[in-house]
Image (cartoon, rainbow, N blue to C red; front, side, top):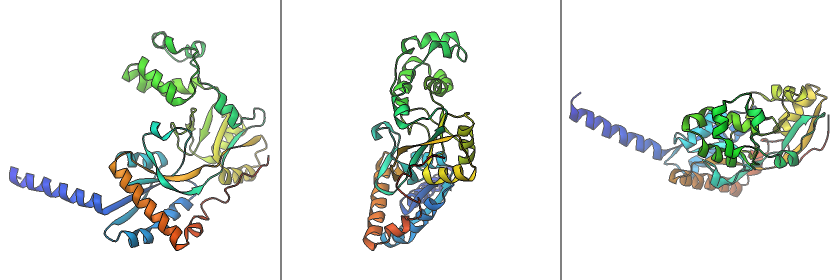
Length: 300
């Protein structure tokens, strides 16, 4: 291929890519045990087609973390679902959509021998304790972090920023997550991504069943899970060592990028959701996402 042909090919490829980007709206759905979010995403297609006949909407489904990352990398226009987090939006790498489309009841499942409430999780500070760090980290690293030792940090973001100022890029990449987990007194898991959505350290677990079994056997201090999914498993598995406590009832949103593409995606989603309300079918299409938006106060 000569230089002129190669240049022509690149120009045509770029034009095709631009055309595809402006004429296709990609909605990425995070994989969850609850398939109702994917069903709701598919219900948007006919309304989207009516409002934007010049565009094509494509629904894709990926593991949760990859789905959100696809928005930040520009491969998707929006992700769903995600509840509004404890962290202020200005400190997140993405934005929430203007319109929410559901509510979800989040429950803290802990062990009866050590019941954990939202107040306990919020009041607990992140503290780098030298005595505990000696077991897992070099003396050189501990010395470098000396200005941070035994100080109280209120959130993951606050501690992460402080660590970044004291450590090299390589050290931060290799040790920051472990240091943050070790600084918090509770080992908390969830299936609902994930990293820095909560103000305290939380780990992403592989399945709801294994997570609840870990809490029941005290291999995990607590788990924050959806009420409808968690309660069904507590009952079916006959877990008797579980303590329940309300965490929150947040609204559920789409996720868009913090750029012009994200603003355009948000405007499109707002128009689609508003049209669903105007047609009177919003409640019908969202009714099956979660069984209830009210907390059921009971104990196993």
